[in-house]
Length: 366
Image (tube, rainbow, N blue to C red):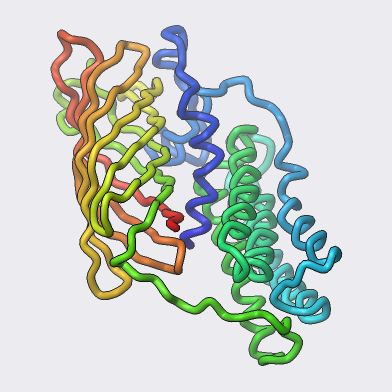
């Protein structure tokens, strides 16, 4: 799960953070069948159209296979993996059958229209499921040697998933589900194979890394988050306040000690008005964070950040504060749920705009 969310958001954030729309793009409307205007999917599609309206480059058709190609290439050149060829092929075959069956079954039963109207098989994303299946295969075979193999594999899978959004072929929830299916199917495929083979056909130097997370050691963190933003009081000020909007961004933690440090964020946010029209707001912020680990795999966090926001209507100060709860899911990964208060202003004369954002983040730490 943690690697899935990291990779789903990576390329989208990198592509959108600094694509500031001109005032001519302010309050355009991009409707879409199968996702409400004021939903997370609708907000993410608004964000895509406001940032990159003319994007059309089907790199995702080819990049989906890159983790598998890298895995097979390293194996062919003698770089030792977790298992030998025979056991690896059996594991991957189980994974592919499970992934294909679940994906095809859901496409047939859900019949969700694609955002571009080209078909009724949008949910879930098959390209994304295949990409994350391949990434998880590489993680299983080489992640024990270095977590950066896993991070690189899932980043390539993320770029594939984001290509499906940027080319307007899938809703964001389609690719999230596809990523979960591809990852889970591979873990299950390897689990079945492990039960069949036991300790046979494992590489001589393979060692199970186990769980060795130490919360009292300093960790650097790189996280990707997504959320949905609410604007309290919009019903009384529909002419000046948006109804809501989706958000995506990157956040980095640089520790001063095991429990506190410096935090930096860059984000992209859609804002959708009652009429269905929208515009994007982009922001950067920096400040401090404080973490309190408990129950070995749980961690409470609070943050206070000050920054700057860009919007077609103007620019202004940005203040962010709020709590979060993390679950440590591996030696290098966390999943975080957060809720935060954010206030900003776009002109000197405009009063502060108060918002509440809730969402999820995935963290790679080292």
